Length: 119
Image 1 (cartoon, rainbow, N blue to C red):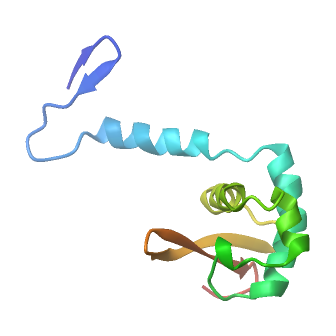
Image 2 (image 1 turned 180 degrees about the horizontal axis):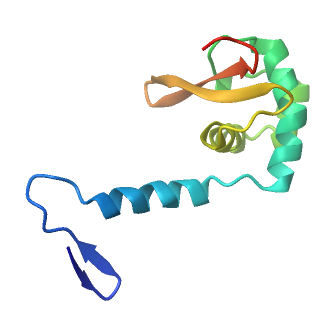
Image 3 (image 1 turned 60 degrees about the vertical axis):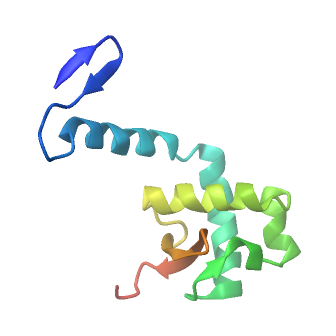
C-alpha cells in the first residue's frame, strides 16, 4: 500500500485492500449516526409502524396512515433515510428494532422485530 497526499492505493495482488474496507465501514457508521431528534422520532414512530405492519416486510411507499406520515411531513425519502439509520444502528426503540428485509426493484423493504421475538 502506498500513500500519496489524501489518496491510498493498494498493491496487494488479487485481494481488496483491508484498510479501504475498514474505511468504508467507518464512513457508513458515521454517516448513519442517529441524532437525538432521530431517536425521539423513532421512539414515537415505530409503535405506529408496528401497529400498521406487525412483523411483515413493507416498503415506505406502503405507509398510508397520515399520523405516521406526519413524523416526516409526508416526505417518503426522509422516512426511508430515518429507517435506514435505525436499521444500521441496530438500536432498539420501545422494544422494536428496524431491520432491512431485502430489496425489490431497487426499493428497500423494512421489517420491525420485537426484542423478545426469536430470530
